[in-house]
Amino acid sequence: MITKFIKQLLTPKNKDAVKAPSGSREAKKKALKKAKTPVSHKANAYPAKKHGINPKYISEAAMMVTQTLAEAGFEAYIVGGAVRDLMEGLQPKDFDVATNATPEQVVKLFRRARIIGRRFRIVHVPHRRDLIEVTTFRSANTDNQDTDAHGRVLRDNQFGTLQDDAVRRDLSVNALYYDTKRQVVLDYHGGVDDLRDQTLRIIGDPITRFREDPVRMLRVLRFMAKLGFDVDAATLDAMDECKPLLGNIPQARLFDETLKFFTTGHANASLDALQDHDFTEYLMPVLADVMDTEKGATWVHAMLEQTDARVNADKSISPGFLFAALMWPKIEERWTFYQKTEPQMIALDRAINEVINQHNDQVTITKRFMSDMRDIWSLQPRLERRLPRSIAGLIGHPRFRAAYDFLLLRAQLDHLGEAGLPVATWWGDLYDASHTQREQMIADLRNSPRANVNPITGQADPVKRKRRRRKSNSGANKTASENPSTE
Image 1 (tube, rainbow, N blue to C red):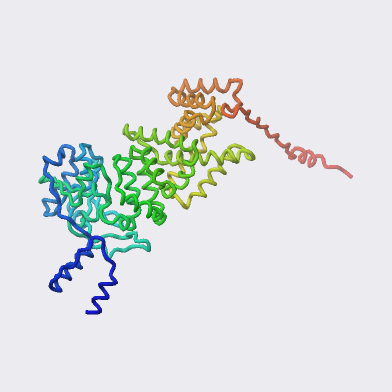
Image 2: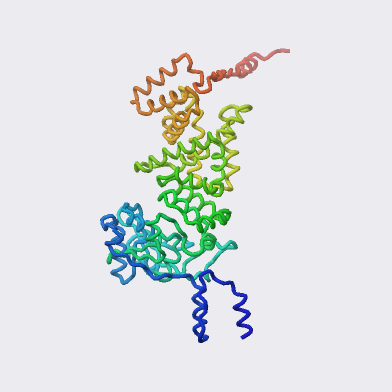
């Protein structure tokens, strides 16, 4: 009895702990066991008349996956952001499905399906042009999870029930399950009420959930920007306390999260959320430095406005261009500094290497994107100069279009002076011109009295001196051999 009393005295109390009822020992044991497990609520079921989801907005692929799983005897629900968007009357771009079938069982039901992921295994099920992500219900029991010293979950492949899976979701508005057969929405954590109140709330204890996966804080900021929702006070307080934990996230994963922030059609709002809550330095330190200056902030917002416009018009965007633009003000600052003592191209190369090396340990950018970024930067002075003999090679460069768009943005923001916009316009006209028109434009440029003057800097290019060919001594040697001197 004394041992049991001491054990109970020293055991930390759970905030949601249930007091042990008086009575038998068995009843007390059950109550204590319940207090240690995550809280799981009974689902509120919303029929079609209340949730208002139009089945026509559900993709054929999502319907096919849920029906196939159901016919095989498994539970299957559309889950997450798709249900949230459907209830808002929006057409979801992606559909996720949750099921009690294991990844191995799912793969057997669909052709070309494959298991991906190590931290948590999921199944990608392709159907025509769509890709459905299928996850198995996760277990609410986190005792045996593989975590690091900070509590971040490294592997999470324990499976459970639908109720368990709802506990493991991050935000209440994303913990909604839609049964396509019965057309019912199941809500375990008040997500429907939060959706109506336009509030983002973490399920469970926010600090614990952020320690499990610090990236959840970035997800909150992204949804804040995307949906225009408020964040409840407890979640905000926990985010402020836990933001340093983002330093423990692998750089490659942070790079992926950065792409999500700026390539989903609400980049400017996402940046505002990052800045307002002091998260920029944890996501991309070089961007935080850029945003500290008025010129840099103006540049970034203008670039992100164009990015949002392209995304919303269903046009493609280049991650290389995006990151080249985000880092450009820092590159330009160091380029200006080095030009005091170095030629233009050498100064730019030094500036690029310096900035990349300084921030290489903070943001990991894939080699392919880094190559694109270097090309875009390196082409800027060559486009500014418009050297006639180099024009054909420049316009045929694989990164010409991206570099030209970059130059045009610089000119529109008056970063190149009065001559900047005419030069950028000239390149645009050249790009759209026919072959004959291009030849005439280049000839006109070559014959211009200021052909050897850089239109941006106003400085004349140094005239290259022709190398004098050294006379060969072979002729003299030959004459000497044919007429040997006599002594």
